[in-house]
Length: 119
View (tube, rainbow, N blue to C red):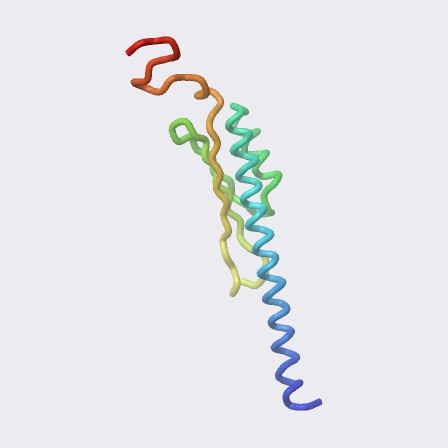
């Protein structure tokens, strides 16, 4: 074995491991986004909070934390999950989604006349 091969082989192995870790992190990020969307859809349908959290957790990566809050007419869901792998490469990935609450659809905004109503 030459000296160049002794240097190149470990470098290629490290590069391959880093590439695999990056792909796993990207997949976990997508899972967080999908879980947040699932939770936001459930919240928009006026499902009870435990059902909303269950919907988000079922699509989230393992060890994820789910937050649900109402912000005016919108339901907002945030899913955070740690990446798998060595502690030196630890990241917390997150995904956010918002959905318009169904109970607000069709109701006029404050100060806006309803259909057929004059100002």
